[in-house]
Picture 1: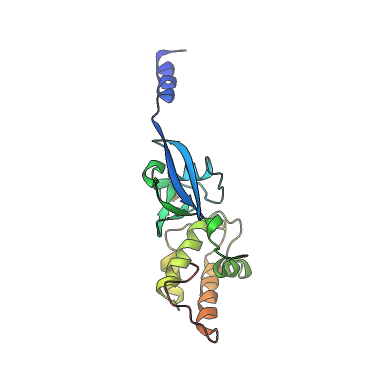
Picture 2: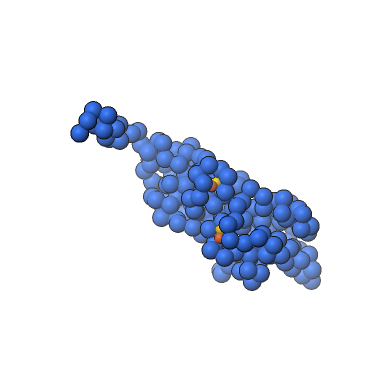
Length: 184
Ligand code: FES
Ligand code: FES
């Protein structure tokens, strides 16, 4: 073994690590992570939540999207250590009740996805849009979903799915749900 390889192995052994506490999908979890680990690595590795996907690792595709303290975050751009104490929702925790959330249901019924790799980003973006805009136009939906890349669909059915949810909410008789409370 040459000196460079040995130094690399020594370096692996001395990587700083720490325990962090996260509230993940409404459950407190404590995990040990290396200081250099990305949040997406810890979510998939230590927490075993494989619905958060690794695409570009560059902030471009949105496949790794989660909510951190109520904000949409691309988890490949955040160190796990810096999320210590945070409240995190992954796609596994997207639905807050029994069964699918209406947004998931609409993506399903409108064929809004195929392989589903891109779903974390699109679902969280759709929810954020509908929280602030109860009846978005096609253009507004497209703008809100931009930044999440899908290699399977042409995005058309995703737009239909989001519009379907909006229609259902604005047309439902006796609907009292106020913007800001959608989907919990
Ligand atoms: S893997 Fe994070 S944005 Fe692509
Ligand atoms: S459904 Fe396959 S990447 Fe979007």
